[in-house]
Image 1 (cartoon, one colour):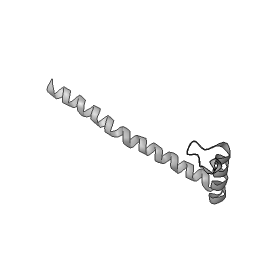
Image 2 (cartoon, one colour):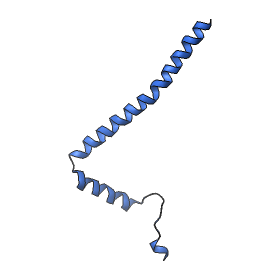
Image 3 (cartoon, helix red, strand yellow):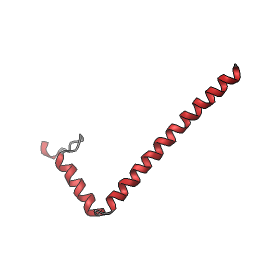
Image 4 (cartoon, helix red, strand yellow):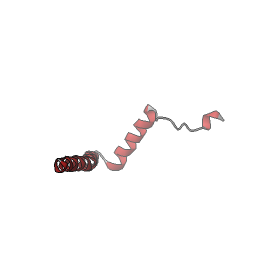
Length: 69
């Protein structure tokens, strides 16, 4: 009975290999680099979008402090 319990922890090496093989079979070798490039660009855009409001706040704080002086 204990063998039927599914572990909710980190996947093992064989699970990762199986997932990689399935992805390779589903998408093919040529499509995977394109997908990774798109993922990288999306992450870069997300980081820039998160960083922009911080930079705008810093600029507005500087102009506010200069206006008070």
